[in-house]
Image (cartoon, rainbow, N blue to C red):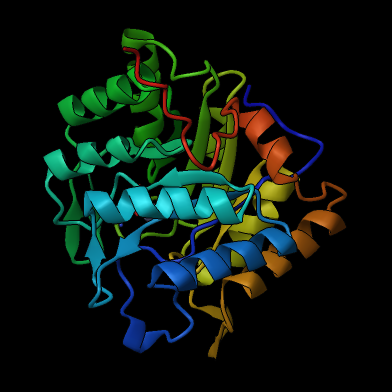
Length: 289
Ligand code: KMH
Ligand code: ZN
C-alpha cells in the first residue's frame, strides 16, 4: 500500500513547456520571474518546485547553462526542493533530456512511458527510462516518477524490480491526470492508480485543466500530496484566468488545511523525499599542491 502522510507536500509546476507567454502573461519565463514566483509560492505553502526553463524568446529550452543557473538561483533564493524536468518539451532529444542531470538538481522527473499528448506524442522508450533512472541514482539525484496512465504504474514496478530503488531509497510518484491521451482526471482513476503503487511510495496528483479540483480533492482524501501550477492549469475557475502560481498554491494550501493535512515546510519536504538540501553555492575543494 502507498504511504499517506499527516501533512501535504505542495509541488508547484510554475511554467511547463506547452504554454506561450503571450497566452498567459502571468507565466514565469525569465529567471527573475521564476525566482520571484518560487519565493511567493514558498510563502503560500509550496515545498517543491518542478522546473522547466525558457530561453530569451520565452521558448522551452534544455540549455545546460540556463539549467545550472536556475538551480543555483532557486537554491539561493528559496528553501524549496528543486526538481528539474527531464520531460522537457515533446520534441526534445533524449541526449538533451539526460544532460539535464548535469545541473545536479535535488530531484528530477522520470516519466514512465510513452503516450499521446494532445496532438503530439511524448516519447519515453523503456531503454531511455532505464538509463535516466540509473544516472539519477549514480548522481544521488532524487527521483519523481511521472505516471500519466495505469500502464506507467506497471512500468514503475518493472523498473524498481529489475534496476533497484532510486537515490536515497524513497519512491515518490506524481499522477499526472487528464492529459488528452493519458488517464482521466477522475476520482475512480486516481483510486485505481494509487492502489497499484509500490508499497511505501509517496505520491502527489495533478489534474490538468478542468480536472484540477476533482483530482486535488480526491488526492487529499486518499492520503496523497498535491501538484498545482501553470504548467497544468491556467484558470482559477471556469473562464477566469489565474493571477499566477501563488494563487494556485494558496488554494491548494487552503484545501490541505481544510483536510487537516497542512502544507509541509520545505525542510519537511526534503525529509519526506529523502533529498537533503544542497548548499546554495557548492564548496569547491582547495587545490592541493
Ligand atoms: N512537457 C511534457 C511533454 C516532465 O516534466 O517530466 C512532459 C512533462 C513531464 O512535463
Ligand atoms: Zn513538467
